[in-house]
Length: 218
Image (cartoon, rainbow, N blue to C red; front, side, top):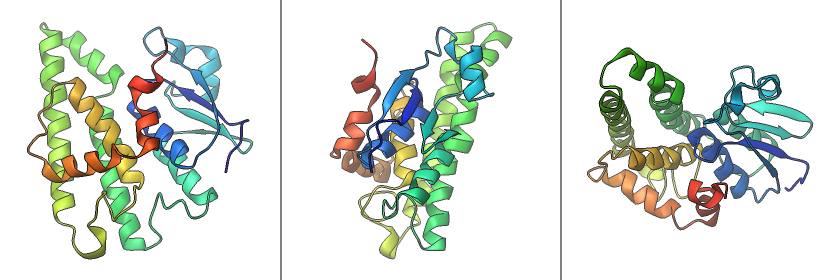
């Protein structure tokens, strides 16, 4: 389902925005992107704070509504675009996908958020070294737990992706987090299931088109 009146407030390197770009692309939706530059403080302007009082990205204008919070946006898309399969219908599998997504969106992401890390850097002497160690520690620990949860899967849950043979909300969260892991030189080579899933996602045009290198301004 496409709607050219859909407006996506995005920052190209934001992992939360990256998640939603994947979901919109998976649906084949037409949307207009409005960049919100976090580095120049555009997220703190009155205009953006009116869209999201937290000053975060993304925000999505769709179906006459203004939505925030990436996981909630993807769940809305799942609920309003029947058959997209972003969340399984089975309650146990749905919980499993949500649990995987929350490892990243609610545990890794918040402590690695730009504002949080900048605050940590301001409290110590060697801010850059502390930042780098901080990123490696929290990203790797979270992804290692994610890998363990994947290894506990069996039967119809196990497949090419995080839950079966089609991408779900969990994959939409995983791939942006792997992008961040690469940025911060986190060694994930030993996480074999995650590597297999990343390779499968890399073959899908919707994931390819959502990559920050493909949407970077200029």
